[in-house]
Length: 205
Image (tube, rainbow, N blue to C red):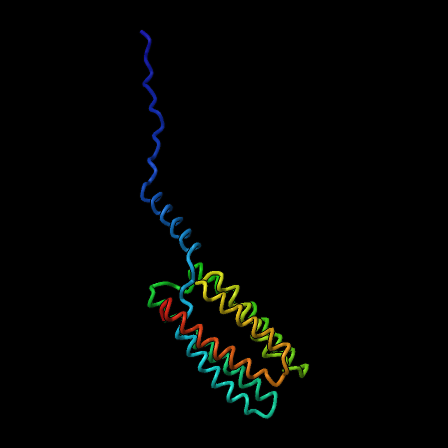
């Protein structure tokens, strides 16, 4: 009598973990939404404070008798403005329960910083060359360029503000050197006051 061999069982296929697939889908959706979102933590009231500080700096700078003291006044004002802007941005992001390290936030920062770094390096070079008269126009243009490029990942009014700064910088470059401090006051002072107020009104503090 022929012996029968036992039937072999087909290899079992492990079911796909639904929770793992769901987590992957949620992660993909979150990353997609972050990529399409705008960076809304640009501070409005922080811009207003920076504008007021710049106006005060322009008054102090206009009273300096040497180019070195004039430059030092604006360098200190710029450092204070960075601290004010950073603190205001962190505060606004915290209130909106968002992170400035989100994808839109990183894109905003990476687009804004290169023109500012370039401006700082050119400032050192021009100071060593003894040509500080060009600095107001240079600062306004490079700051505006950074705001335009960073504003591509933010609300619409931000790149518009950057274009205004660039236009004022171009005017300053082709104006008498004695007008430089006036352009600084109107640009970094007045424009920050105006656009900061609009941003605060339309998009929150």
